[in-house]
Length: 268
Ligand SMILES: [Zn+2]
Image 1 (cartoon, rainbow, N blue to C red):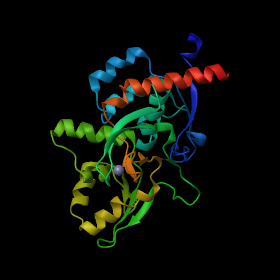
Image 2 (spheres, rainbow, N blue to C red):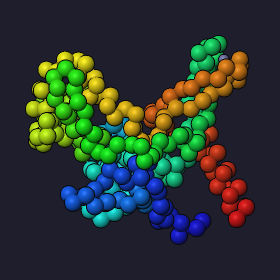
Image 3 (cartoon, protein in one colour):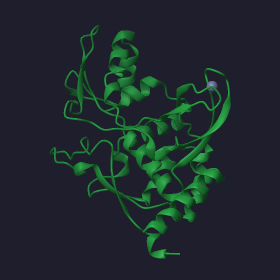
């Protein structure tokens, strides 16, 4: 075994291309969206079993702290959620296998069969020159307020989850929206709970205009795949499951990656 490969760092380009990472003076913190990742090691399994779900911000930062190198001046808290998820999937591919096998049910004939997907084949959405800069100013049609909105970041999820623990209340979608508001009528907001109170009083048209304002500009993985039913041939698009097999892939998915590695070693 080539132990020298174990501590390899691998370059990775984030889907955001680093466009939304700037310091207070507007300088790029992560030019081109270039970061480095290194595969998870066996000792990290304990944390995976302890925390389990990939929705916990605390767990996610544990999984990234030893395996992600960001440019100076940036922390994982600053990452867009979509970039963080991209890194997580890439780490899974690098450390375990890019393959995931799940049962899917054909909507045409109800045939259920296991389908093996490859995470590395999933589409990744990146910004282009037509995309707006952050924050995006949204004018609310009913109240007439202007709201500066930004993308969801890791620190936003952490703040919401900490609020949930403290208040023993499950956060609603307006909490998530409130965390992304940077300013209202040009005034910077400080407390997202206050912003949330204001959002809750808006007529629904206003809040839905606001909530959907950045929908078209979502970077990162499109977590779905096209499946052709083996029984009737019908083609359908299905969401890729994010279940326990993310960290504990099935044997068939581990073996396929082992086979790929053997073949690539023979070729080189
Ligand atoms: Zn079918």
